[in-house]
Length: 343
Image (cartoon, rainbow, N blue to C red; front, side):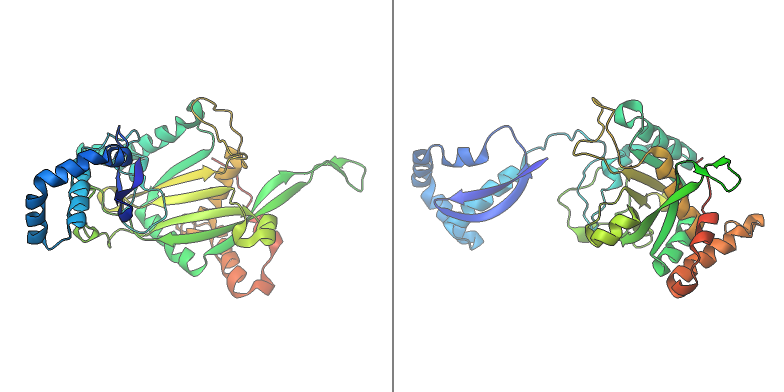
């Protein structure tokens, strides 16, 4: 974790620097004993002026530069979280994969895509006090992800239904029949820049972004937000998503897989933690899985036809009609072809 500290000379703030958290108060050290600073300036005034002249700086600027360089060279505290840094060097707002997995350690030893998928699953199963509540995860081939991405860029929004048990109803013959109601969720894709290429070595945190390897060959990172349709109608972009899916393409080139992470929104300010695994969420695990499966059902075109499944072409047509011919869109047909169970 870092602090934003303003280096001050006299009464003038000259520069704001982001520096590692240390065990002393930098501002206090700069101002605790001004007489020492005066004595220092008196003893070394000539040398300081000569150095400032050589660098073409004012004396105050030279002092600030020297302080900044000293702070920069201090060894930062080792991070508590896995990975090397939770700050991305690109402009993506997505939490980087390196803040979840220790990528250098993972790449330092040979791992198959199957082993990485197993580690990904085990990691999320250990969350929330070992219950895994609040998260879903999966891995998928990069080819499947590219197919979904191409469809999603054409049709970035859709609606998917979730089954909801209704109260028993009495049919015309007098028998009680339980009807299945549905709650519709609005889904929205967002696309972000590809992540920096993963490396088995620790990155240089001070290296300029131009020194990064070319990441243009990695697929784009993407997210999918699921929000109850009624809430979205009321609050539009201010509505709270109940589930956020993130597709991580970091290992697309090295292992041919995309890692999927689903985060369910807590129902209160405090989610489940290691100490209190009983946190409540806006969705249960089964509903979250059903919503995630809706992405595969409606955006992974051609997968069903490989197995001779005509249902696949119907889901494609539903997505097309929703965007291109909304007057022909059939909500009952959508419900019919969304009737799946979570694996």
